[in-house]
Image (cartoon, rainbow, N blue to C red):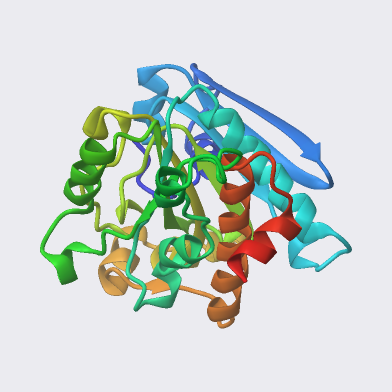
Length: 297
């Protein structure tokens, strides 16, 4: 398994290639362009490859947000549709409604992605129950913020599991902040996978996993990297400069320090809105971006 941790499957594959000779069996990667956005899909098809990369078997889709970050014309709407199509493709086989779960700690900006995405989610489950005819064209969507163990005393997987057992959604969509091994990807990519998620794993604080195995329903995970491990960043920058450092000593000195961009507040707010709108369009196929704007006020 990889010693340099990244929540992004495409990075994990590259880290493996840097440390090993040859090709890893059971991994397929494709790169395409959709509406001007680069989309990389990594399919992990064997347990051996999953162990080597430290990722579960399944599909991981990473979207580069270049056009959106450059504020190009119609980039927000185009990116929403690209993300929505990917989400819809991973959830189309799930019957019933959806439970959107915002993971993380809203009091810590780099960890507030889940909270902000839920704020941009159209919650319709109660409306469909009360006025089924009026809301027949909408998806059946509920939302939940389970909080973090340090403030609730309860693991997120236990909270989500209890709610999922009660309302029985067809799919859980879990949203969380991720960790990258490169500053070039922080707040610049979105990863979507059908494998579930282990909250906090990227920063060495792994909690109980949210997956079909633990919840009994399919789990689609969305995340954006907001932090980089300081030791990994330093090692990579030194290596690029042709300098070899003592990795063990550096990790011992840096401890669990992580690095995040100076503009993290605005970046997290912007990307969380993007992801929330994408979930809304994916779960309510008849809606356009302007409709979501109107309903969210």
